[in-house]
Image (cartoon, rainbow, N blue to C red; front, side):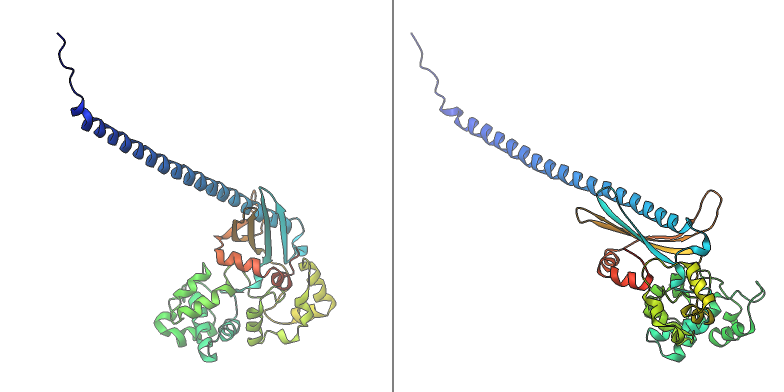
Length: 334
C-alpha cells in the first residue's frame, strides 16, 4: 500500500528567501564592480598626471640648462642681455625666456632716490615714499661697529626714520625680496605692489633701461637717472641684445652715450639672469617655473641656482597673453 506523497507547499517561503539573498549578493557585487572601475579609472588618471608632472619637471630643468648654455657659450663681454630658447620634446612645446636681472631694482644696492621713485610711481605720496626708502636703507645697512661702510648719510637717515635704538640695529642685506615686509612702517599693500619690480640677485645698483618695464623706468625718471636723455628707440630693439654691442655703443656715442653717462643705468650684461620657462603639452596642460641663475665658474658647476619657484596658473596665463609685449620690452626673439 502506497502512502500519500508529502506536499511542497511549506517550502515556498524558503525558496523566496534564498532568491532575495542571491539578488542582494548580485547587487553588492555590481556595486563593488562599479566602485572598483571608478577607482581604477581615477588611479590611471592620477598616474598619468603624475607622470606628466615628472616629464614637465624634467623639461623645465632642460630649458634652464639650455638658457644657461646660451649665456655661457660666449665670452662675458658678448653675453646677450636677453633672449629665448625654444624646443619640442615629449609631446610638449617648451620655451625659456631669459633676461639679465638688472631689469629689476636691487633692494640691497639701489640708491635711496630710486627706491623712493618706485614707491611714488606706485601711488605713494612723495614724502611717504622717501620715508619708506630711508627705512629700507636703514634696514639693509649693517649695525654700527659691525662692519665698515655705514656712511654718515645712511646713519642720519636711520636715526631720523627708525630712532636711535633701531639705528644701532641694522639688519644687513636682504636675503629675499619678500623680506621687505619685515621693514617697520611699510604697509602690506605697498610691499605687495613693489615686489614684482625688486630683486636681491642683481648685485649692483645700476638698472638696465632696455630690459626694465614701464614702472621701473618711470621710477628711474622720478629719481632723475637721466631717462629723459635716452632715445625711445633704445627700448624698441628686437633680437638678442649683446652686452658687448651696447658697450661698443657707449664708446661710439649715440643712445649708449646717454646711458653710460646717466648714473644708475647700465646696458652691460651681469652675472645673474632670470629664466622663465613655459611647458605646453599637446593635451592642453601647462606648467612653468622661474629661476634666477648665477653665471660664474664654480669648478664643476658652470652656474648656480639662486631662486627656483613654480609659476601659478595666472602667471602662465599672463605669459600666453603678452608674448609680443615681452619681446618688445626685453628684446627676446621668437
